[in-house]
Image 1 (cartoon, each protein chain N blue to C red):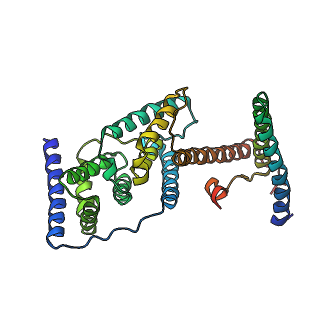
Image 2 (image 1 turned 45 degrees about the horizontal axis):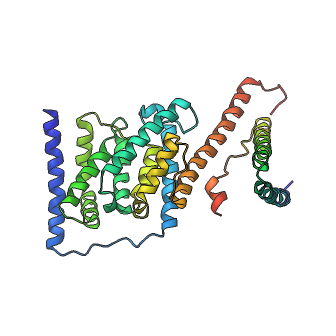
Length: 75
Length: 261
């Protein structure tokens, strides 16, 4: 596996995430859907975070090491 | 007795500054102003500094004893304490109408002084107050921030300030300055652009820190974002540390198999 393969996977994931964000916007427009959408996102982010933790523990590599919040935001 | 000696030293330091300023004016030396820094750039660099400070605080929690030590969210009590002290610091700043007069350069000078003193005397934190008091007095005497900065830099070059402040710091217990988020907010307030928006920022800070339920109108969004970024980075940093701790714990609790690398 290479960094290119990782990049390709993340590009594909991002495309789906964008769709999810757009869907969230649509849900938010409806009065009752807002809370439900938030719960779905919470579940997703919670699972995502837990998986990073799990894989970090299993592999012994901190998968967040070297990742900067500012770099990721402004680059 | 000790107080009198300290007063004397402060007076001597002020005198030095004043003489430097008078010399400067008498010689009609031109003061080189720093080129204006793009707001965004300044904010970015300031944010990085603050993050560095937060990390430094966390790393030196035990060493310094006071200060925030832990980042927000680590512990409810710490957070409550942080909020109380932040509100009181902001109120203190609001009582001073002199914030507008500060500029980025002055803040940098003060920061350098404080850092140097923190390194030299980790148990004494009141260099900031001393530096600020002196600079404020100079401003009240009619000197522009740029002039004071120039004078301070001249004295720094000669080692006068460093030496005098070392004496001051050793002379008695400091009042203590709360590094961390409080400093972060105050630092934002010191920026000329932030100073203009002092009121909305303070409104925001009070709202956040006192958990007021009402929405506060007129929040300056970019400043709010800056502070949110700082908190987000701090939280991100914390998450990363959690994983580090877990990996460490995992390594300690699971003994390596004989054939394992």
